Length: 314
Length: 108
Image 1 (tube, helix red, strand yellow):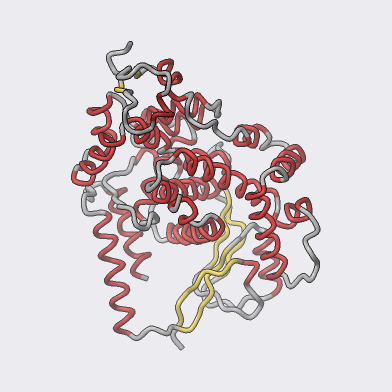
Image 2: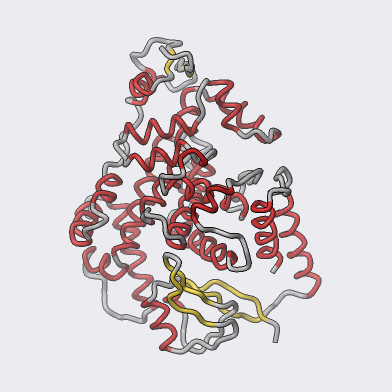
């Protein structure tokens, strides 16, 4: 066992999570972590498959259509968006099937709806009741900011990968919450009055912070290494700026807080990495306001199709 | 007539609508298409915006708030930004620049 261990006793009311595990067991290395992550619901495999087909529009379209046909909730969202588009275009033509609907809304938007719906559903499955809505809203805000930064800047990172990395950047917090609910809430509350940030409190209490756990989860779910690296370094990006997603997700989280996109949450900005901004070629000037507008417009659009209440009322 | 800008999805935008803010469609650092504020949109503008990947525009709508209501909204928005940056080290020029732009955006 490592000296840097996280206490993984499983007496926090989530018996299903720790069933068959030794009480008060400790885990800190990723091998130990994997053992304890097994009881988590499986991460949607469609995400890795979407990333694997980004360079092949035909394969990507076939993959998405085949998947959506098996997913009634996502299919209904695609059909709804297609109907809205058809109405706004004043088309009287009916939407005969999903293939027509995905053609109408386009590959990028179909891919985005699938990513958002799949990860929202996953978070709804694993987040304890009462925090899913706020957690999703923050994840969505950082995902949207990451996606828009990827479109604006010219990193060798794709917008879908940026969206996924942003959506998952705090996934380690859910893991901590599931296993050590009271300790996590205490750390979170202390964070509100500390400038040091929640990750310092987490390391003190658990021996590991949520960013590291999130990176382990990404590896466990076979996501591309760049996504795990971005999650691991989203609070302290300077040592990993060679991975394009790292500065993106760091700046995206600062930006989502600066714009106060998580309503009901506590948005706070304490610092930003200048090196990350430079890596993205970003300067904050009057031209930045167009980016702010796009981000807020995308957030409103995403919330229309994935209302926060749908997760928060679980 | 006083106006305020409101987001419109491009597909809901019609010729004759007036832009509330300038439009600059930038993709991977390349300026794809630009239109000035107060420009009256034409069918060709909409086609160009769609072709260049624009999704939203800000359309000018009549301002219905009184001067007092506008001032109160701006003051509240500024207070929110100050709260968000309350613990920020604004001696950092990059963070200070971000703060200034967010404050200006919220105060517009």
